[in-house]
Figure 1 (spheres, helix red, strand yellow):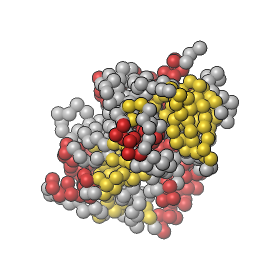
Figure 2: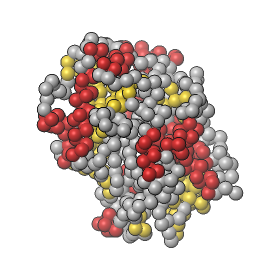
Figure 3: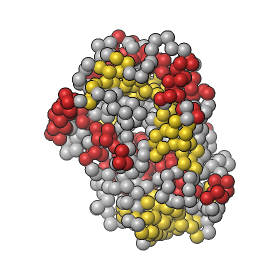
Figure 4: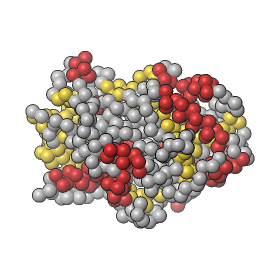
Length: 539
């Protein structure tokens, strides 16, 4: 089989790329996805994330683990990643957040010309079909449906009020370049009458509506890419496994890796692209020296506080909660406006732990249920939680090969809290977040604190509980970073340095982690990459 372009990975960037490139009927595109079609009810119903996130049975989820983390008292971290068309946008909390203006301007300052805030804003707008309509910051005609919260719980409003009591201002829009404040998150969710309240993954927005309509687009699911095929230094195709058989697909123009921050570098290394030191132990012949492959891993380290509540208008566990949920499911099927449509993290905030900072360094997600160990530890009854994460961590990790077997999981070492500055920021952020959770506006909801947090804790005590319980909030980036320095893997045009016919387009290309959730930026990367490819191959 031969196409103009072969895209590896049908996630947030890959689905976007496939849809945008095939708008030109002259371009023939093949998309390889290791998972399924991304259309099942657990994906479409937002609350289905509760079944997919923990990783039991690996439902639409790679459910990776890190190597033991010294900064987390030797614990292995958990790294869920989406395995279906839509990628992690099929199993995430659907939050639509772009980050700060300064994040992207920092990319441009590092030599990533064309990636400043004013450069990328048109692509965010192009992607959006925002329920609020179009303005200078937002679009209303893109494939990605962006909605307000469908049926937020009163306790979520109380969190915003409590934040105000602690001098964190209310904000109505986290996505106009300055995200400081507390408010309701917008989300990637259908607001059209026919699918109101369903998840709008990147696949549901971009790919599903066109994949059976365009003869120039071939989507192959259950297809695990194992290596890139080269002729000299030019990528000419991809080898993949499907149903036990080894197959190949050829690319006349380009191969585009969109397999994510863990698997894009893994596939490059399996193909002989990376440092000799990374490849030699596994007997992989080096095709091209690129020492940055797999390096520069950044992720948002996150700590959760939780409370039990007598308020039953939250997501709970038990007979009464089950009966309530059944009613909410029926309501969701009827009009889309119910607890089943909830992002669970309906509200949150961004604030500065030091007033001298130029932008927030901490984010919170306020959750209308008890979250413990990525929902892998359950608590009977009702409760609520609050995540607090370090937005721009200094710690750097890596992705590496554990084996030459392409079916093996990549090695993941975020090196969480290896830089002491991250721990100090997280302690300050956790203290300030607890002040919000103990504020008067939430008093009527508080019943019992769950995880041993108390008044008057010393920094040493905060450090211990953080090292015992902190982990990712699911935003790994940077392992095929864009730039112009010796450790850059791709150019600002997302072309792999020193090779021909090969690009990377996903969260791995971010040179620095953005100040917020990473799904919307990854879709933006897909949009911008599609335009660059079209320009390069214009007739």
